Image (tube, rainbow, N blue to C red; front, top):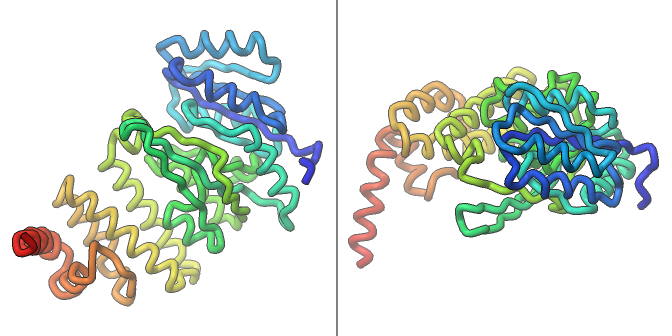
Amino acid sequence: MTVPEDMKISVVIPCYNSEEFVEDTVRSALDQTHPAKEIICIDDGSTDGTLELLRSIAEEENDLIVRSQANQGICGARNSGLGIADGKYVAFLDHDDLIQPRKLAHQAELIADCSFSPDFVAAAHTEVHLERGGTERRRPVHAQDPWTGLIHSRLGRTSSNLWRASSVQKVGAWDSEDGLELDTGLMFRLLKNGGRAVADSVPLTTRYVRRTTASMGNRPEWWRSFLKMRSDILRHLKSNGCLNKTRLEALHVNMIRFIRKLHGHDPELALRMHRRLVQGNFQRSEASFGPGRLYRMLYDAIGFRYTEALYPLWLRIRTLFAR
């Protein structure tokens, strides 16, 4: 299918201290088979040579716009770029991610072939974990029920998705109050306001996960952000009569999973969050969670606190008898 000529897409790249890798990111946006209307790089107060590098590239590339601002954080940089963008859709590309040459054309074709005008394209992507020797992991999308996909973190990521500019602006754009769940927070607000997504199962974006990646550098804060966001989703679905069995069990599975992760780092905080966010919300959930059937039996019989104390003991005993 041919990409419509009037399908104008802007690319926004927030940049901060990224001189080591940002040129590859910018070049991947410049080398699209469906050229972006503009590529906007927002230097967010870098203290290295990022700004100078971006300006040198802009001298060669007419479609590259470079703006500099005092440091406002990732949300401020993205929103500054969005305010400049003239495209109907916007691709927000993080400064160390890459997109393949067909990415914009492919997603523009999906939109053109869609029976409605989507508020965002929820796209699969590939993660490369640099601290694990470059291990690759494909992240699919599950958009048949966007709410379940959102709960499971399966509606794409910032860099892989394509966003309708007016829809993003209408819901307040990027919001730092979403903590380390910025993309989930934005999609949550879009869905709450009746937004619709089209799924893109082809992974044409590569996301590089580094030790300095926000969620990797502060895992406990990410776990708390994840739990708070799912609690907000639960409250919204309940209050609007949209909490079906599938969504309830997806919430239960994910909230227990992340509370268990938090328990390994801060047991008392995990217990408090379990009491506040889980108890009383999931009495009728039949979700299969935890590492096995015994864990669920213990959890139902003696509660989260004592299950977390006893289950590791059971694993050690089982290991001894298996020798």
